Image (cartoon, rainbow, N blue to C red; front, side, top):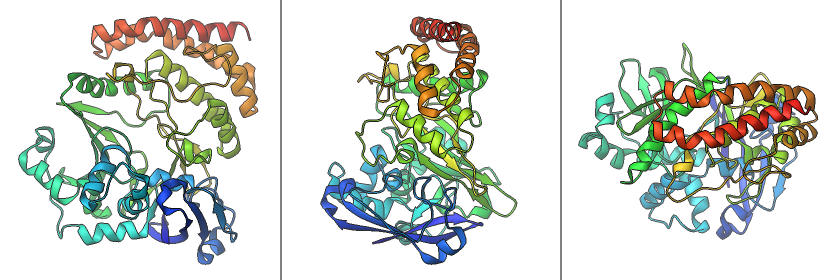
Length: 429
C-alpha cells in the first residue's frame, strides 16, 4: 500500500491510499483500490479540482476498486529515458512490467503537478545530498564534466524521472534567486525563482538536434497564431529550456497546480491504449469548466499539429490543469515539435472516428467535435475558418522565426492542404 499526497494550502498533505489487490507482476494491469482518507474527505467532499487525485476521482468516502491501476497513477510512473535511469539505479529491469510498482515507489516523489507518492518522496530524502549544488547556465550548456558527474551521481535518476515521460533525456531544474541552477528536488521552495524542464538532444544523429532546435520555433509560431502557450522556450547549443506551467512562484514559496494527462482524464491506464479525439472531447465536455473554449482550442491544435507535421499526438502529450478554485482547463501546449523529421517514423496515435485518413475532412471534424462536446457546430466552423487564414500565413511566418528553409519547404504542402480544408469547413457550414 502507498500513501498519496497533494500539495494544498502551501503544504503537502496525505489524502488517500493506493493498494495493489492482485497481480502486482502485471504492472499497470494489476487490480487496485483507491481510498481517500476520512480527514481529507471531511474538508473536500465532492471536489474534482486540485483537491482531488483526478477529475475522474472526486473526493468521497467510498473507495474505488479497479481492474487496473488508476490512470492518474500511470501519469506518475517514470517512462522512457527517466525509467531506464531509475531502473539502473534500483538494479531492476526497465523493460518489464514487473518493475512498475517499484519504479512508482521510488520515482514519483517529485512530480509534475501537485500529486506525489509519499514513499517515493521518502526515497528522495534518503538519497538526497546534504546541500544543493548550483550550476551556471554555461556549465549546463557545455555539459561540463562537473555538471554531468553531479547529475549522474546525485540526482538524474530522480530529477530525470518524476512525472517527466518520453524518450528524450529531460531533467527538472530550478533556478534560484542568484541565477544558479539546481536539481529541482534539492532546492527549497523559498529559494526558488523559476522552474524548468531541461531537455537534451538524444544520440548522435544530427536530426535530433534539429528537432530540438525547431521545437522552440514551433511554440513561438503557435503563440503567434493565438493558441494557448506558456512562456517562450529557449534553445541553445543542443539544450532546450522549457518553463514549467504547473508551478507559480509566490512571495512565500511555490504554488503547485493539479495536472493530469488526457489519458487520465479519459480513464485510460495503459501505454498503448486506443483513444479517439471524439472520446477526448466527450471527457472535456464532462470535466472542463469552460468546455467550449477548451474544445475549440483542442480542435485548432489538431489542425496545427497536422499542418506542421507533429505526429506524436498520444494522450500523454496533452494535459489538463486543476486549480484550487474549482477550475479545470486544458493546459498550455507542450511536446509540440517537428516529429515528421524523426528518423524512425511516427504515425498519429489519436485520430477522429470518421473521415480521418491522415488529413482529416475538417467539415466532418467540426460536426464530430460539436456532437461529442455538445457545442455549436456553426460557432466552431466559424473559428476554424478564421484559423485557416492564420494557417495560410505559416510559410512566411516560419521563415520570419528563422526556420531552416528546407524544413519550411517540406511543410508547405501540408500547410496549404490544412488551410484549404479549414476554409472549406467554414464555407460549407
